[in-house]
Figure 1 (cartoon, one colour):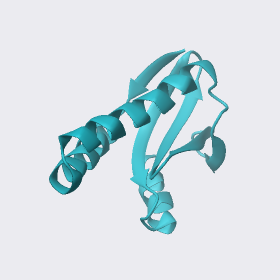
Figure 2 (figure 1 turned 90 degrees about the horizontal axis):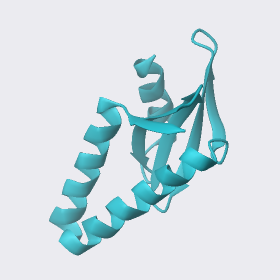
Figure 3 (figure 1 turned 45 degrees about the vertical axis):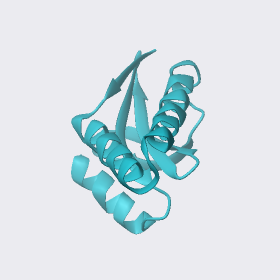
Figure 4 (figure 1 turned 30 degrees about the vertical axis):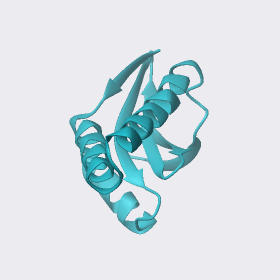
Length: 105
C-alpha cells in the first residue's frame, strides 16, 4: 500500500516538530518524528489497525485514528493508497478534531 500525506498532515507534522524542538530540543523532536513515521509505516501493511473514527456519508470515506503516544494519526485507505489526513495532539479537544475533519471534506 502506498502512503500519501495531505498538505494539512505535513503542516501538522511540521508544527508538532517545531513545538517539540522549541520546548524539549532537537533530540526529542527526532524521536517524535520517528514515532509518528513508524506508526504510519505500519499502516501500509495493516491499514485497518486504527479504530474507526468517523464515516463521511457524502464521500463514503471512513476515517480511522491511530494513536502514537501523544498524537492521533487520522487517515483513510482507498484502493492501494493510504492517505494521512491530519495529525492531532491527544491533549487537544476531540470535538475540535471532528470539526476539523469535517472541514476537510
